[in-house]
Amino acid sequence: MTDEKSHLRTTFNQVALLYDQIRPGYPEALFDDVVSLSEITPDGRILEIGCGTGQATVPFARQGYRILCIELGENLTKVAQKNLAVYPQVEVCNIAFEDWIIEENAFDLVISATAFHWLDPSIAYKKTAQALTSSGAIALFWNEHVHSDASNGFFEEVQELYQSLAPQLVKDDEPPLREQKVPNKTNEIQQTNLFAEVVYRSYRWDATYNSASYLNLLNTYSGHLNLDQITKARFFHALAELINTKFNGQITKGYLTTLYVAHLL
Image (cartoon, rainbow, N blue to C red; front, top):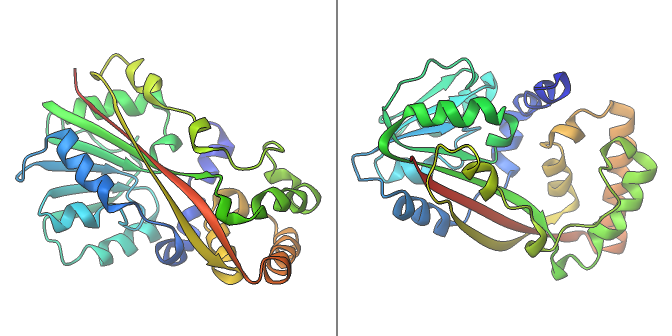
């Protein structure tokens, strides 16, 4: 892992409460699909890698699963522990997944929500496989930003602000991807030769933000958090002005939640 990536994966810990309040969750149908596709039994045990504040943990905890959550950020861990305090079968540990001592053959399901990409895949997949029982499964899911007609061109127009005020955040000049163009991670999982056929599901949905809530959302992204204060202030001011004047104080962001489930070979 590069030094920059290692640093960026820790930035969320700075804004744990805001992360808990503003980050979008996941469609309810996804949790039902994870349970059915993984074939986990009601008494099964789950390992969650990078639980954050527990947004994706709670739906499984409600169903009574025993869950061990691994979270790198100390502040995120504290928020997750508070959110999950009513579920005595859930434990949240403040440790990097790389440093966690494997409980081999101990889990029926390993999940990771918008977190697995921060790990070195050559380590993460092997360690995950070792933690699973012989009939266990992995379930990885992400929220991806995609094009929405309801955004009325906001994300295409905002590219100009990024280029002029925060060019370090410009990866390319392309607007949000169409959902059909979102990269598929099936091959990455299958090429590990650790898992059987990967089952893919996707869920398309929109979320609406006003200027304040959208800036709060951006303030939970690693790249935006890493901006110096002057750059961030100028950029956020220009963004708020754009939303409030040209988009009547409200924008819509398109999401595609992608899910990959595979059983151990």
